[in-house]
Image 1 (tube, rainbow, N blue to C red):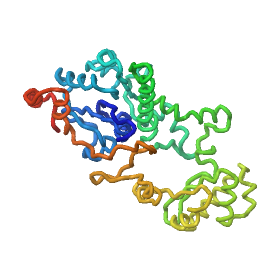
Image 2 (cartoon, rainbow, N blue to C red; image 1 turned 180 degrees about the horizontal axis):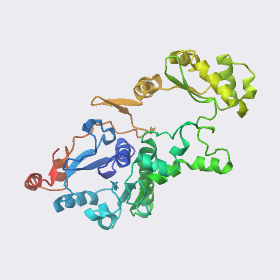
Image 3 (cartoon, rainbow, N blue to C red; image 1 turned 30 degrees about the horizontal axis):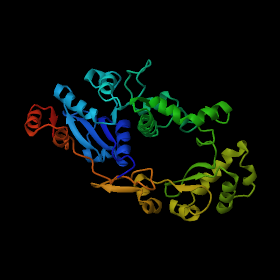
Image 4 (cartoon, helix red, strand yellow; image 1 turned 135 degrees about the vertical axis):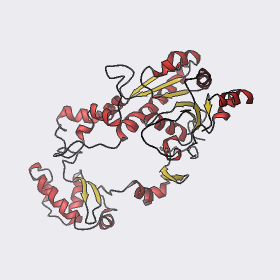
Length: 382
């Protein structure tokens, strides 16, 4: 079930963008086999496997890739796969013996998806980094934050997931479309820094036109406009107002009981500090629930600022079944929606190595060989 039913994906385990892409493919029906490290991996924090939501719906095979037999198993899987996703530093897959030349030589129809911070080449290709570094280098976080404060970190949503996971997922699907015409696979090189630049496409245009400036916190969408922003309420919660268009702002003025002269004065930048102070003071007069009741059904571009837990309980998301709970873990439901094919049923995050023996048996290996490989640590059952 799902638009990608029948697609076979091998994902070499990592964190962030690769697993995100694998989740998106699995959510829509792809069979994703996640290749985990057979040994423990110190990633600096300890979280139970079931909380890694982006590993939902995948099968897990834990291999010791330092052993030739483990590489042979991996290559057998790649021979049967449509897609490989790897997020190693450039050159690591080649040293393991599963680089593009070898894999495409064995399986010419393979889509070989590579996701890194800086790309497969260039002066920074071998440099270590995280989402924050990529958003910093690409010019993203310099644009986000208050006029009198430092740049703001937007979690790891921009590089890891928007400019990384979604970028490689798009690249894989584009390559699969091309393969349907040519019959040939290819390498997809997705660099998170370039994903960040792609997300900045409209901003580059606005900068070139002079519509947006590099003065953080003074522009249309960065908090500079007083009627497009976040406001604290009496109960120390927040609401958002995006009344950019004149008709939305005019309605906001009427509902809030502000002086009607602001409808014309809204474009006077010299008066923006005054208007911002007025709106700040107005929204602090009542709690968030009051503003939800007053503005929630009005065309003023209003929304309360909710936590993710509150969002899951919001009537809109409840009505659309936008979230789900699996193994006690609240998480987003698959997106986007498809009118005919639907999505795959949400499945648990598999325990590390849980599917190892079954996956290897499906490759045609008998019980004796599987037992031998298990005993020698070629693969682990978790």
